[in-house]
Image 1 (spheres, one colour):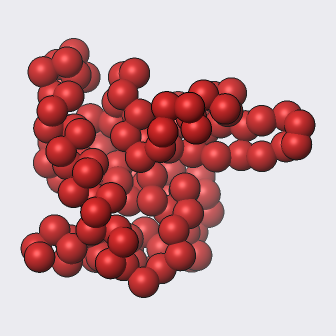
Image 2: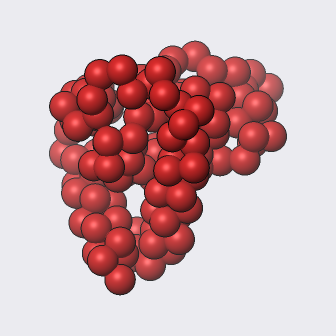
Image 3: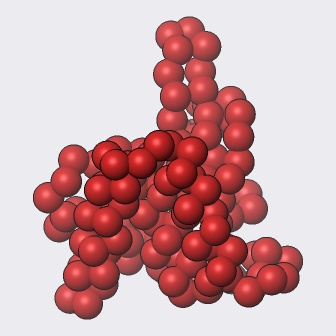
Length: 131
């Protein structure tokens, strides 16, 4: 139950930020939050953290279903990044595009581990920026 409250708070907060601030500010603010919460050198331990990353991501995804805001890749990826950072777990936002037809998408990823998208879904997009 506590995870549902935490995820709801994070998603609602990020939803407000995305409505009131520029995309650049939202991405930068989330990256700064991650930097402040995740200790340096943690990225070198991704193999050892894989279980924790998968467990926390699953908790987020399960709890996210109870938040009455339309899911979107940007909102959910930024929110997941904050959720993981609160636990000291490193992850990035990957922005990707397809050419024909043009489409943009994003997801959270830690090293090669895709956290809130299927691997085939992520591979359908060419990454253009990692934050």
